[in-house]
Amino acid sequence: MEHKQQLWTKAYIIALVTSIGINLNRNFLMSTLSIYSKQITSSDAYTGLMTGVFTLAALAVRLFVGKMLDTIGRKKVLITGLGLTIAVAIGYCLTDQIVPLLVLRAIDGVAFGITSTAIATVITDIIPESRLLEGIGYSGVVATITAALGPSIALMVVGESYQQFSSLFILCLAVSALTLTGSFSLPYVKPDGRISKEGIPAENKLPEKTFTLSLMISVLLLFLVSSGQSVYISFAALYGISLGFSQVGLFFTANAIGMLLSRLFASRVVDKMGSNRVIFISLFSFSGCLLATAFLSSNLIFILIGFISGIVVGILLPLLNVRIISGVAQSSRGRANAMYYAGLDLGYGLGSILWGAVALHYGYSTIYVLAACVVLMALLIFIGYKRADA
Image 1 (cartoon, helix red, strand yellow):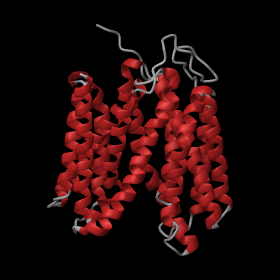
Image 2 (image 1 turned 60 degrees about the vertical axis):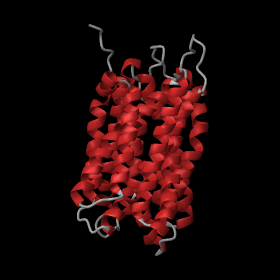
Image 3 (image 1 turned 90 degrees about the horizontal axis):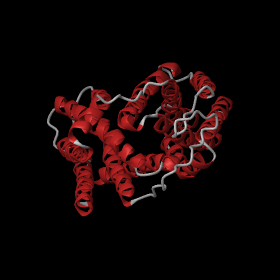
Image 4 (image 1 turned 90 degrees about the vertical axis):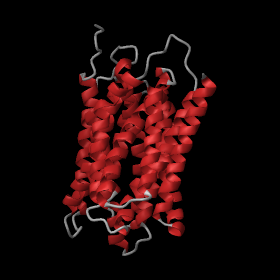
């Protein structure tokens, strides 16, 4: 019986804890700064900008960060990004003016683009090759849990009257400081297995893989899937309310549960069925979920679709991540991770804007039909590529 490589090493656990701190800080502010901006300006004009400038700044910096990770070193870039996060948290504590707040939000986006790409690259370097999908899956579980807990904790801190934002900013500062302190103890493992304080990957003795057509197809599939997923993230609650459903929040709860469960068994499913077949089934199923959402008849079906789509996306995203990471040499994983997150950000960002414009003129049902077509397009691209590659 083949010996199973160890996944839960000290380095992997510290990296996951660091990822928790990075993602908690992001999710503390994603849903609450829009409330704060309206509170200090008495206007809705700036609420969307709070998310928009953050997302665009994070997206813009990712590809530059990818090259820095592969040249300067993972740990140095990670610590620099965490230091910038602390500086921004201090800035939040010192201002209640909208223009400085928008500037800080953009810098915060840059800091998150740096730290999230860096810690993702550290994690993929640490995980044994034979357990890459499983390890990335658990990392995804961390992101899912923090996405669920972050806004709830933040709203509890600011209070029902939303008057305690200074306490929230102090909490962000404390979490940032603890995350930075913990990251110093990260015993970074080079891809060749040696411990390094610098976190610069060892040179690969084999010829380095280039950014191939296969990798670009994986990034394109990721973009299309995240574009489809954005219709749930941005409009599921509004759609459910428009249909008169009660407790529409249960859709997101079911979605998160499905995503969590999928990432616990995805590795075994892929081992048994093969990645190509799993991608095919997942894309087909996700397209079906989106189409079914357009013709909802009950709240129960809405929640069930949330659960099933959570399972499907929870399998697809780490699997596409693994394909992107596996498409390059270990010394280029920083850039590969940057491409993964850029594709994700671009899909969510452009998708939300596009679906919002369509919904304004044609209604919510239409955007779910169109999103299903986008994911179906991803399926057809995948089938066409596999046939051409055969």
